[in-house]
Every structure is written in structure tokens, then in C-alpha cells.
Length: 208
Image 1 (cartoon, rainbow, N blue to C red):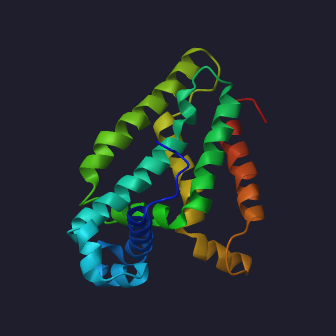
Image 2 (image 1 turned 90 degrees about the horizontal axis):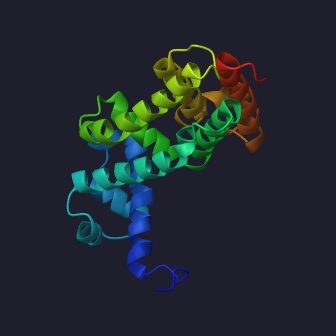
């Protein structure tokens, strides 16, 4: 199979549907989004969309699955417990901010689901996110046991790290208003990476 082959028509239509759905679910939530609105945004008929995704819940599930797949793939950095803690943490911050910059609608649709109590996706979060969170906490515990970092509450440090980085997607509109420009720029994300990375590293290590 040619891995460089051009996407098929089906792939293109599915991609258009998912992109439109991600934005609408992020803006309007599950209840406020209709199949008709997604079809219109994707440039196809409602009947055609239903051929790909027979129900709104199936479409919402797929959107959240794709969001979580992308997010978790980028978050693998803390698995490297043998690395230098400061560099590993900076890489983690960089990956989280890159996701916020490159996939803001994906971040927001996930945030909307969680803010709403994770009614539709709670089991998947419990099954997929929680084990990885515990793995990352175990990395901190090993670093602390080896005397490589200071004693910290690793769980709450990760919560704070998520909040600091994901806010650059979820609250980007507010940040842009404060900064007096239409949207956040690449320079804003670079500044955030430097500051958040330094804050996190200083909290747990002597690395500046």
C-alpha cells in the first residue's frame, strides 16, 4: 500500500465533517449542535452526513476520540523517566502549548465536555486519561525517590500545568482581548512556553 497516496473522496468528506463538527461542538456544545448545521458547515447534505455518522452521538464520540488520540500522542514526554527532569518537563509544556495552538477547537470541545460533567465521555476519560495520569505521577515519584527533584504533590502540579497550557486554547479570546489584538500570535505562545516551562521547572528542580 502506498502510504503517500492521495486521500480518497471518502477520507476528504469524513475530514470535512469532523472539522466542522469539532468547531460546532466547541462553540455550541452537544445539545446546541445539530446534524443539519454540521452538514451545512461541511458543505454536504444532511443525508450524506448520516451515511458517515448515523447519529449525533456517534459523531460526537468520534470527534472526542480523535481529540483524545491526538492529545495523548503528544503527551508521551513524561514517560521518559530516565531523561533530565528539567528537559522532560519543558518538552511536556511545549507539546501541550503546541496542541493548544494547532488544535484550539479540539481543546475547546474537550473542555466543553468536561465542564458539562463529562456526561457522554466520562468512561473513556476514566479508561484512557486516568491510567496515563497515574503513569506520569509515578515518574515524579521515581524522580523524588532518586533525589532528582524536590518533593511536590505531583497530581496537583499536573493539574496546574494542564490549566496553564490549555487556557491558551480555551480562553484565547479573553487573552487576545487583554492583549488588544484579534488573536494570539506565535510570539505569544513562545513567551508562554518560556514562562510556563520556567515556572514548572523551578517548582520541582534547581534547573533554571
